[in-house]
Amino acid sequence: MILKKIMGKIKAYAAQSAEAPLSDWSVERRSPKPHDVQLEILYCGVCHSDLHTVRNEWGGTKYPVVPGHEIVGRVTAVGDHVSKYKVGDLAGIGCMVDSCRECDNCKEGLEQYCSNGMVGTYNGMEKDGSGITYGGYSKQILAHEDFVLKIPENLPLEGVAPLLCAGITTYSPLRYWKVGKGDKVGVVGLGGLGHMGVKLAASMGAEVTMLSHSSKKEADANRLGASKFILTSDGKQVKSVKKYFDFILNTVSADHDYNLYLNMLKTNGVMVCVGVPFSPAKIPAGTLVGQRRSLAGSLIGGIPETQEMLDYCGAHNIVSDVEVIKMNEINEAYERMLKGDVRYRFVIDMVSL
Ligand code: NAP
Ligand code: ZN
Ligand code: ZN
Image 1: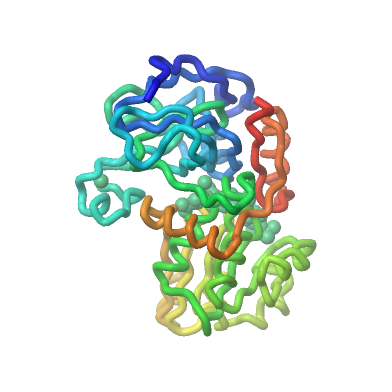
Image 2 (image 1 turned 120 degrees about the horizontal axis):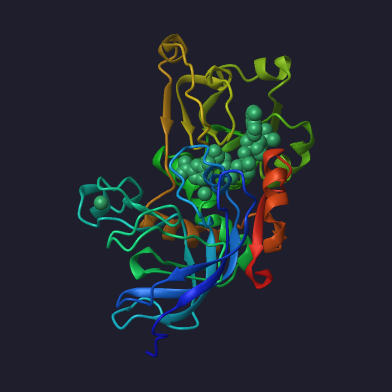
């Protein structure tokens, strides 16, 4: 296989500080190593985690930061030892580009929980000491083939990109807690993660209720697969689902009161948080104790499960509902995302960079 020796400087969009808007930058990428797959990025989804990181809301952001971990593209080069991909294939990269591969979690395909720390697609540190990782708001990226995903050929690519984070982050807890027919599922927050949660839970046969603080999203929630809609600012509606759900998937990005939703769980019910607001939540033990409720969390999904999810979406014709934007519209897109004004995932068309 012919390789470009040094990929060198690649066009990208970066934030130089927590206060600065994202703007043109160029990122130094390594030349492909023997197991690397290099992609020309076609589409990259915009996750709320990108915004949290750019604005340093979780702390620890290393600037300049190039966000983006919902990446689909075409293979432009492969290393000598790559066996799973060839030039011209469609491929994807999600939230991780590496992990130790030796710990029990890695061996089980739970690389996201690597005991030695997985390497995030952006704002991570390369295991070989070569520096910080830069994500998908960029023309090209590369990763070890074990962290590259196969993309179903039958789906629109812009709708596939968000599956690499929003899709797997909602699929994984639904599978782990064995959600299916007969289960009453509540999804909190109709954004990027939430709309995938509704689609996936409905496709698995659950009865899905949308729990939203936006009154204008009811028709969309129904179209996506929810049979009920609860406006969480309406006390009467909230009361109607007291002790109602077997399982709640909480995707809310902002600080909020967890107790409102925990009280909607029936005996033995589980609320899984995938949203990661900044402040710690205050939960009286009694809320959990009274009905043997569980509060849990879940982080993306491992590589084998991400591939399983992509294949599942291919077989069931499931993609994200997207609004395609140009790279230079990203700062405005962040402001709209903060207002809950996205139907339901922004995806950057990388031709525009
Ligand atoms: P998003 O598209 O902005 O959606 C978040 C939704 O939360 C909004 O659409 C809104 O839905 C609801 N919301 C926002 N502010 C609220 C408030 N003050 N009170 C109640 N509801 C509110 O974000 P996203 O990309 O889906 O990400 C959601 C969260 O998940 C973020 O914190 C992100 O960092 C995190 N995340 C976690 C993982 C993981 O592995 N665990 C992976 C990806 C992302 P309504 O208008 O319907 O109320
Ligand atoms: Zn994400
Ligand atoms: Zn590991």
